[in-house]
Length: 371
Image (cartoon, rainbow, N blue to C red; front, side):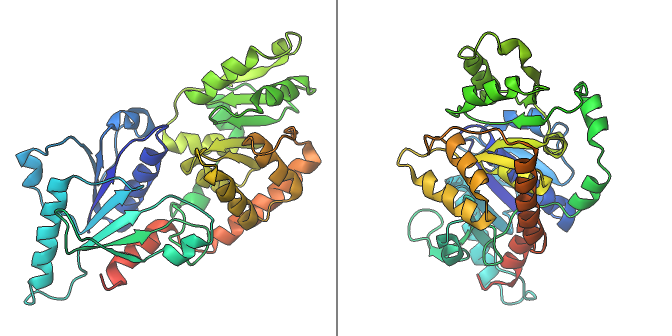
């Protein structure tokens, strides 16, 4: 099949990350061709250097060139995270879809599919909305039907992105070798903590606790907002503690290397959607900073995720403190607490591994559903 994925970069490149992983998996595991239409492709220079076989990237600018409009329409059109695809391309797609519908002479083939790939959530409403049709009444796509496709954590949703060879890669992985190759020296007895975050209010307290430990926790700081937030938080740190901080400032990492960073840590602080999923597959304890919304709707989303996770009270309290929902302090876990969190994450990961991944469910949806 031919897939077109439209992506607009909102901020932080998480949307690009999800779309690139999906495109890569469709090409790898289905032998399909994928065009990723993206309005800001610069992030792929470090996220996916060298590109990927079967995936072409289109710098999405309006109006579309005649050369683009001369290309074949896709079998599946995906608008990711509520972005509006190019009106010219929607018209091209709708015309091709109508022609396929009307061609009764050809052997039966799945109808061309228009998918609205939604945000990830553990809220119960996701199971009710997943797969529902959305007739298009206006614009160049009038008369066609979109379908909602919701990623999720249960068999009644669209699932999560997971490469077919993920477990094989993890089995062959050696954290010490990866850390050495990336210039991260060993620090015996120190917890390794990855920080990929926005600007959590509890960050100064976390730095103080990390520095006060014996030995001090090893902080692996990702670039961008996390690095800027750590630099700002250090200005509020006790001058006697700051010299004790053990910090490695990381460069931007391609997706496969970011995954291995999470595999190498004792505790991961992650943010947004893509890194949450990768933290689950890593199987290590983690604390998730959910994307904040002005109406505090993210509070309910975080609680729904923690309910699905069956998080113990200490892990639930840590999430609420890290996200600024509760006034209680964030307590950096000791080894016993870390073991409890690891047991929780491992159990959740096992539940997910027993389900089909998102790309498999998506391909099944567009080939079997009467669209």
